[in-house]
Length: 59
Image: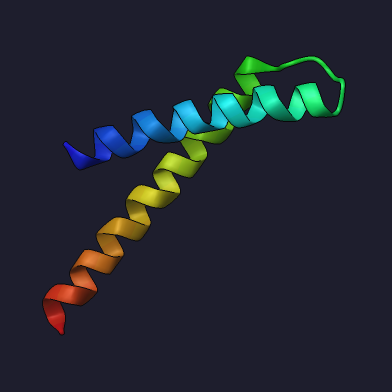
C-alpha cells in the first residue's frame, strides 16, 4: 500500500513541478515528460524505502 501512495504522490508532485517550471521558464508544459520523471522518482523512492527498512530490521 505504501508503494502505491509513494507512486501517486510522486507523480502528482512531478506534474506540479513540471507545470511550474514550464511557467517560470516560459516554455510549454510537457505532461509526458513530467509523468516519466514522476515514475522514475517513485521507483527510486520505493527502492530507497525498501533498503532503509531492511537495514533497520538488521540493526
